[in-house]
Length: 339
Image 1 (cartoon, rainbow, N blue to C red):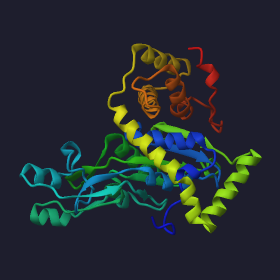
Image 2 (cartoon, helix red, strand yellow; image 1 turned 180 degrees about the horizontal axis):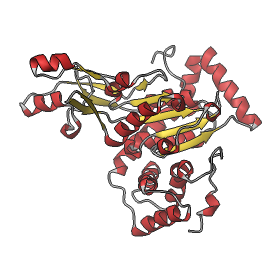
Image 3 (tube, rainbow, N blue to C red; image 1 turned 60 degrees about the vertical axis):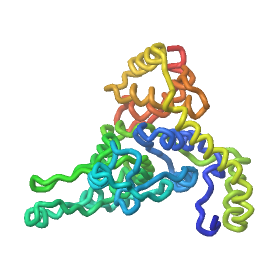
Image 4 (cartoon, rainbow, N blue to C red; image 1 turned 180 degrees about the vertical axis):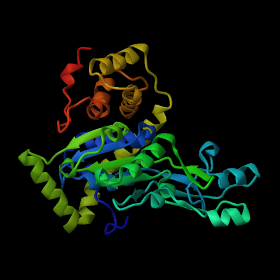
């Protein structure tokens, strides 16, 4: 490891347990739909996202593919890789872990989704696609800092791709589709403006973070940061065992998740909770079930329990509950514990 280039270790972040758990749940199960992290400046939001990628294992990616396709997953390949595979070609691959792709606040729609060369298509009859940020994000973490300051239409495009797992670009009757499966992480400071409720609802999970108010923990934040800056070798040596343990837990959870089950009582519990809290639509129910199963897998279990549902509720429900304009997001778990 080159300690000068290494990011701050995820396991060295003090406190912020809900934020760390929500991020881990999403990398174990990317179908959860991402996480929106709300909080004041200086609460380790960006640090946690960048550090998360170091925990993830290397994966097969088709060599030279613009979308980093998995050579063993034809269902989610780009058109080029699929055609080559169907033609009998043995796709060469390289091993790479997930990275963090940043989406700047100033990004335009074309920069996000990519562009089609219409003139080239009309002249040759072939599609010429210039990849955008969503192409780079495929099989990676897409990080959007200050997501509340993005143009609403760009946020819509991001959330559509996150939900569908594909990006489609259409220009003058010509269309191009490519895989866009990524872990979406948005961060925002509510003091700088809110997202529209319709957009907030489409993030799978949400958490609210704040600075540490416990003296000992606040001191530990200082100690860790100074050790990282002044003695990186000692810092990484101290936290490497914890990193290794968490990395193994994530791998194990991914494997267990494929076998995870739930009972009808769990379904009844989730339905009753969403009815009691008057949550609109069914997105919350689906997300709660997926999150409960993922939480069970993270704990090494193959069946979701009521406790998993309660944990899922605190991540999947607060941003979906009805509230009046300018009212703060709040969630009282005692309202649902007896359901």
